[in-house]
Every structure is written in structure tokens, then in C-alpha cells.
Image (cartoon, rainbow, N blue to C red; front, side, top):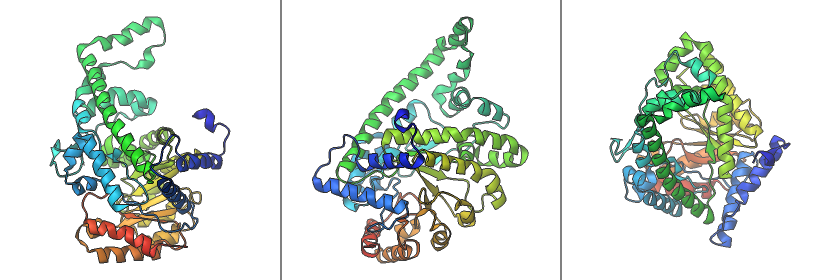
Length: 444
């Protein structure tokens, strides 16, 4: 894959990735009509992202566990029965007919997580109700004095420090020595000796079992995605990256920990984030190379209005996030940034990006203001409230969508979607979204 991109400019890479997205290698469509729909939808998305006027506003329905409920199942059921997971998501796609397929790959395999005793999250039937979504268990899984370990060797930190803390079954991996110690023959046997410990071998055996279970899950996910694509529905998210601040603040230091670090050891925090930029870019590129879809999802958890001041955002959050964004763009990819909460005070900061190369998915941001500030720079997406989808009427939903299209979608550059992932909603309200796009969102 590296040879394929060697010597190409960012624009040339994008053109190649667009061709792959438009014509997935080896995909057999169910009919000529399905192939036509698929190509129309990808073209519609690309025109919208590139700030060209498409035929109409695209509809992207970001799914949480809603397809499970819609199919009469529980979140717990689809996390443990992968065939039910696939059937539920395909049924949802058939019945609601959005412009993209939101893959069930975001719903993890419950059994695999149990095998390795995953402690970072509670999930349906395992710490939370079978009827509810995930719940992150925040803690300082990286201690305040461990920045140098992370900075010097992130992979070693993940293997011997972080993973033993978030996976109960893998605690023995903390007894390993750094594999970089194996530099000469005399150092080889002592470095390998910890692998002979029964508890370490049991940890690796658990990893193998979890890997086998994850393979079963992935095989079904891949077949599900292929079935959706073959029916005419393209995938939108080809992989994931994160803002370096969130990589540290979400599940390493935790919210309280990283806030304290901003004041007590800002230089270490900034150095660590700089070191994570290349890792996040590589993660996004690797995923896109595998999926053939050039859009990289970046959830933004701690950059919202009110979490930090504008000055702190400019210092701690935006510089390394911008480097990740530009690095992905240089690889011919489209970062899709999910700005959870409000981003109203950030709009003038984030507008400084290449034209037509990013998507901003807004939750509670003023979409008229977003359009005013970003309309000549970036595609915007969102922000139908979950409260409206749960308790509103189809008429109110349709009217809200109409106003969004007229406000944020003038001339293109707008994708209609909810402000957050959808766990609960009235099916009539979801139908109203697609109906509104087809009624009010036609450009030509």
C-alpha cells in the first residue's frame, strides 16, 4: 500500500481514494440499480464534502443501539449474538433508506471483552442494564508521574503499563521487560524468561481466545457491511483517529487528571500530545487503507464550550488536533470531526483549514453561525436534537430539518443528521428526516 501512494501529492492520493470508494474492489452489487444508487450516493457525499452543489442534501443517520430496539432486541443481545446484530442493522437500513450505512462495527463483541476482563467500560448486561448503552469508567489509568514513559516509548507503555490496568486478565503483562532490551544474544534469554511464567502465558492465552472471538465478530461485521454496500449503501466512516488531548484525557489520565496536568505540568502534557500526533495519523491511514473508505471519524470529547477557555483551547487542544487533521489530509483522507456539545466559541479557531477537506459534525452548535463562519471552508453536518427525535412529532421533526437545510445547506456543503448517535427515537421521526431531505433538500 505504501508503494501505491509513493510520490503522489495529497490531491492525487485523494483522487485515488475516491476511485476506491466509488468502485470497491471485488464488490458484487445485487443489481445494476443497486450499483447506480451506490455511485450516486458516493458522488453526492463527495460533492457535498468538497463544497460543490450535489443533487440534494445527503442523509446520514448516526446509529447507537437504535437498530437493536427497532428490531425488537436489546443492546445486550446484539453484543453477544453477532448474527442478530447484522440482521438488525441491515433491517434498519432497508426500512429507513439513508444515504450511508452506519456499520455495526461500533458495537463491540461482548464475549471477547469478557474474556480479557475489560475494565475501562461497562456495557449492556455487563455492568449496565441490558437495555442501556456503554458507560466509560473514568480513572487515572496513567499516573501523573508516568508521562516520560509514555513519551519515550508509547508501545511499551501500552503493553506493560496501560493494558494490565484496563484488562484484568492481562495484569501479568506488567511483569514483562521491554522488548527493546533484546539487542544482543546475552540479553535475549533473560528478556524472554518472563514469558515462561504460567500467569504470563495464561494472559497471552486469553489474548488468543479474545482474538478468535473478535475474528468471529469481524467476519460477520465485514459481511454485513458488504451486504449493505452491495444493495447500494456506501459506508461513510472508514476508520477512526482522536485528538491527542482526548487520547490522554479520555482513558489515560481521565478528566480530572488532565485538567490538573494543564496547570501542574503543562510542558509534559504538550510534549506527550506532540508525540501522539504521528500515532493518530498512522491509525487513521491504516484503517482507511483496509476499509477503502477515505473518511476518518474523530470524536471530540473535551474541546467543547465550557470545558476550557478559548486560550486553553488554542494552547492545549487545537494545535495537535490540527496537525492530525492536516496529516490525514496529506494522506488523501477526509477527517470527519464529531464536535460533541457546543462548539460556538471555537468556530473562528477551527476555520483555518484547507477548503473542502473536512466535515464538522455538530451537536449543539448554532448551525446558522457555523454556516456563516465555516461555509467557505468546510462541510457541516448535524444537529437534529435527540430530544426532538424521542418526544417530538414527525411534523416538528420535518420542520426542524427544513429549517436546517435552508439555514445550513444553502448551495451545498451540508449533511443532514442527528446531533448525537441515536439510541432512542420514534421511527416516524426518523422517516421524517429522510422525507425532509428529499422534499426540501433538492438542489437540481
